[in-house]
Length: 282
Image (cartoon, rainbow, N blue to C red; front, side, top):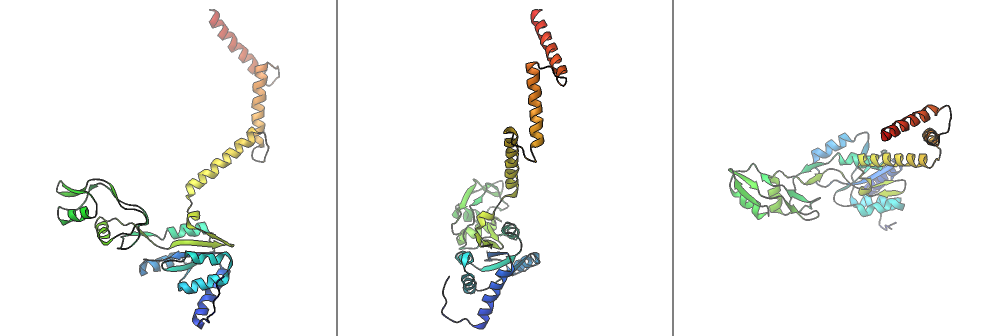
């Protein structure tokens, strides 16, 4: 825990205490980056999350102060503070919170100096541009362009900015003209806290379809193992007994054990064998 030796003004102390109080009131707390969100979009996000989550904006120094005073694993969230940070308080579990915040994101054009969140790719094919200065602009940005059929055409698909690289002014201008919007704008979850555990966003980014498929496969494999190992459970006892009956019946038929339940099958087998032998003899 960090040690603070200076006295906080009353309004700052009130802010810190409010954050600490919300940590006690809500089981899950998220740290989000709000950088680049237009005011109108932020207002809409707040409205959409009303009754589900509460967004608390405060100065970074006061947020760090509150986290340090709370201590424990919560203090570790300070390391994730970046950009225009805010705290979000909710009763939803961290996975649901991550999903909710992903739904707040929209794509926007890149601004000069921003970092590419992923590889930015310009696909080959025709554009809506007529021949003109745009051809030179594209080529200067490293995008292979040509004139074809009275339109500007991108000759080859090309990755123009790698993930993590800074987008310069010339590239940002060209991408905007091509209507390529690579920037995710919304509440970006940097960390989530619940019951003394801090979750990184990559831990919470679960593909529900894939996860459900894995659970279904695991359940089926466990069921099959239980049946094949003759390990009875409430779910597999019926299948184990049915398998045992089938195997006992097959053994009885093959061994010619004359029991009333299988005598017809034994006679049928003998009849088929006699027909097969008759065909060989004839």
